[in-house]
Length: 207
Image (cartoon, rainbow, N blue to C red; front, side, top):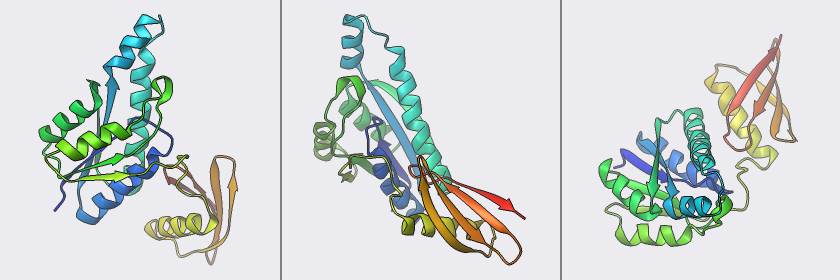
C-alpha cells in the first residue's frame, strides 16, 4: 500500500514524534521515507533585509534532515533527504508528485527559529491539495520520544535482541541527554546508552 512516504520537517520542537510516526508506517509496509525541508523564501528575504546571515538556514535544514534520517536508520528504514527553497506548501506538494508519494506525514503546528511561523496552515493546504493521503500529527512541546524508564527498557531489550544478546535489563536511568540502561547476560555486564530523541542505542560490554 505504501512504498514512498514523504515527511516534511522544519526542525520544530516535537518534530521527532512526527518522524517516528512516519518511520513506524514505513516499517509496517517496507516503505522508504523522503525527508523534505523547505527553506521559506520569505524568511530568507527578511534576513536579507535586516542584514542577517541566511547561510544558517541551510545548516538548520541539513541538521533537521540528518536527525530524521538517523532515526530511520536505527529502525532499519531507508531514508533520503532533500532541501528546497520556496513556498513550503507548494514545494511539498510538488515534491510529493515528483516522487509519487503514497502518503505525507506532517506536523500540525510548531515554531521554527527566527520566523516563528505556524506550520498548521501548511498542513491544512496539504490536506486540501495533495494527490495522496495526508496524516497529520499534533506536535508536542518537546523532541523527547523516550520519556520514561519502561519505554527505555523496551527499546533496549529490542536492541539487545537484535544484537544477539540474551540479557536481562536490571535498571534504566535518565542522565541529562541520554538514557543509561544496565543489563546482564550469564557471563558479562552491559551498559546501553539510548538517545531519548533519535532512539539510537550504543551497547558497551564490561566482560
